[in-house]
Length: 173
Image (cartoon, rainbow, N blue to C red; front, side, top):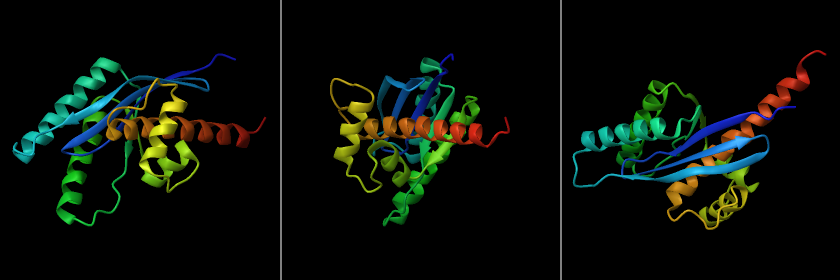
């Protein structure tokens, strides 16, 4: 059986810091391609921050050529203004990935933690450690936003594999 190669961009959206990570899956093997954080200044007008986010994501798509994108869903924010602004950043990420021709999947934070650590309420430090282990990195990503984005991509690969497995089991022979 030939193993399928899949390249996924994970995004942990935000307008001040947007984590991104690209992984490649070959069968059961996961490899980190690149990761980082897109940062915008609080001194910059909000629309310009969103535009920078769009431009940077477009550049990353062109540079790393993922076939699919996985984006973290917004969890409830106690600060409504912050929640709305993060939601707008998520919208920019979704549209940019769609315009880039990527198939897009979205995951709740609890789903991501469960897929990466086996525990849906895992602390960030545990997610970072598991990202390091699963991708066989020499060290944990420096910024937790980048680690979170890699975790989103890992969650997508695992979820995709489970869905394919279930589909194969329900097909008539």
